[in-house]
Image (tube, rainbow, N blue to C red; front, side):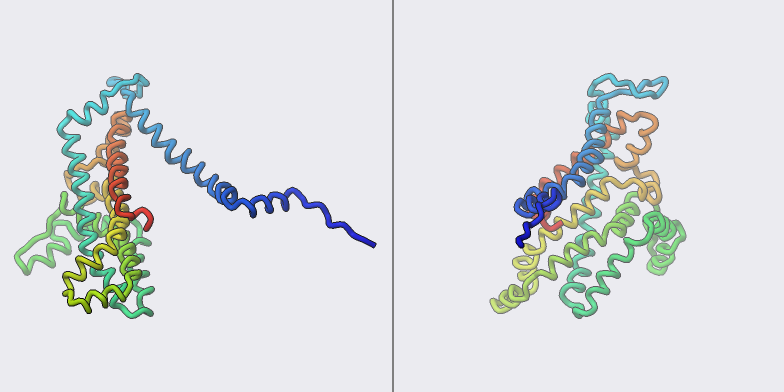
Length: 294
């Protein structure tokens, strides 16, 4: 008595097709998140850009869909907008530079000096501030930087006083908030640095500074650039910390927030500024190979 194998069902035929075509399988897996990205993110950016060409009725504050470039003309011709845009870029660059200076020695210790069994605990300790609420951390710094606060109390014996609220306070708070995003990529880069390269540099007679410039820095530059993508973009778009500790300081995010209800097309035009700056920054960082480290 002979038996025949049952005919393959549609599910098995589909599974066999996907098994033979891994690219098709990958495309199907990524189709849903890519569709969501296109609709929710890229779609909203498109609407934002288009609404920047509309205008607002000066009497009713209603959006009037009359196409013009007045909002973008105002961005380039109004001095306050240029100053705020340059100030925002300067703050983002300052925060990124401070994060690099502070993050490197911390990452070097966690990746190269600390005992291997302690390194996971140190990484968890670095990540712990990210688990706390953004507002809790920002308001804690408001208390620290307040006149007569903790920083003033600590500096008083030295005859100094804290910066108070303003641009310096904004840079300090943003540096504290985004520092872990710089430490982790540098830690990963240093952890992958081969010991043989350091030994070879020492055998050839290179001093510590020369080894850092010629061996360590080129190897971890992509990691630094990868971390800077986070610190730069997050600082450029932030507006909450500025409102809490910035005093009278205005950044692009504050102008966007204040114009949303009063002049939505102008707020949309202002919103294109950080988008364009971040895209240009990503194109510059891409040359370092940092995007492959994200």
